Length: 462
Image (tube, helix red, strand yellow):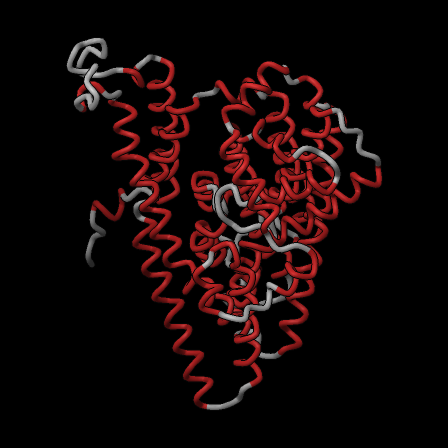
């Protein structure tokens, strides 16, 4: 009888490694920000050598150089590796998930339940956000001098975001763009991921309806593509603790807590509403409808929550969410692959909430009195915006600018929140991904792949 290797016994779970990288990056970044290390150089900045047109590297702040040459490139490389594999993973996961339904009736049942829960939870999220922003009115207490400074600092980026919102597809054009004329073109544009998902959905339906040996062989080939994609992403995910350290170090060393404190009321309303929605709304739905213990559910999805908070991207977290659904929650594969793949773009509860709060916050700041009807319009557009927003960092800002224009709020006001947007993006992405897994758990009730592969196989008790 062979003994397990010491390395196997002592191997630390990935989510703990990610948590350590998260804490270390945040702590070291805050230390560098608040102790003056961020301005430390090897040479005297006032020396003649540093006064030259192109000073030597010793004259540049070491922390800034470390960010520019180490942590930022490593973080960008990690996200690039993930996004490189997202298209084959998303396509194969959705096609396999649809084809495993076995018949179009099963697809329709699961699809309608997924859509219904997406609309209900998104609506509750936006409603909660609107109630809190009207109750606490964070926009009425912003210092005008601070506001002008923030607007001036963010003017260039704000102009680009507002321009994107004006040039983007709207109305019927946006609806028609879901059906791609060029699938390859849709796959090459991360912002048009809904079009790729539509093609994958139709392709999966085609596999279900086609009963032939060739179609069966094609299905096996796409299953192989999914397995290869997951294997490659598994290799990339091993770099996650290092990447998470880099993300948190960059955030903390550049901003500290200063910006969060300067817009404290707005940040508190957004984070408070997100926390209530995730911990109360999701928990009630899981307990009352899905029969899940919220404690068991959150214990199972903690790795996906950490990854989503660190990367601020639902798409980048999709591989981790799929693995968590299979290994931790024990959800039926046909449901998890369908719901999570769709949800990475189409179920953005946290994003819808953020968009609603931000629009009303800016309306309060600029003194624009929105009627109940206008706020209901904001709520409806935010629900649609949450479905159509790209699952990438800061993908919701053009939608916020578009909604502001619709209700007469100066869209340029988003410059007020750009400084704190990345932190809030991390928070709302965590709610988005947790919501995807929550809806997958709700839809999975009664949907079992086999005797050892269904929601009853998982630990649903506390």
